[in-house]
Length: 78
Image (cartoon, rainbow, N blue to C red; front, side, top):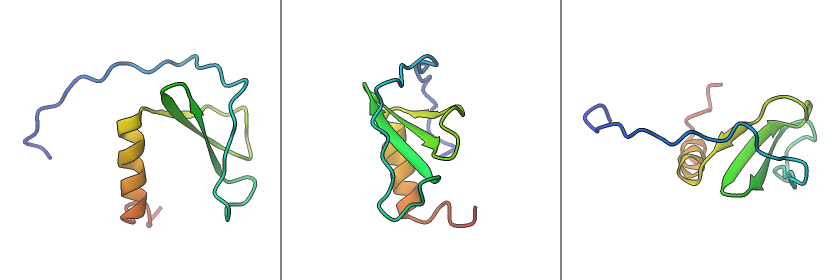
C-alpha cells in the first residue's frame, strides 16, 4: 500500500483504567497465553503470565486488521 496517503492517527490513551477489565483467552489457549479485554472503545491485549506487563492497545480498525492478518496466517512464522 505504498501509494496510499498516510493519515495521522489520534493518539491512544496510555492510562486506561484496567482495574475492572474482564480478561478473555481463547478456549484452547494455555492460562499464561495471550488475553484480551474490551475497555471502552479499545481492545487491549496482554500476556497471561505477566499481568503487570504493558498491554497492547488497539482501536477497532486496528483490531479488525490484526484479526484478519492472524486468520490469513501472517503471523505463522513468529
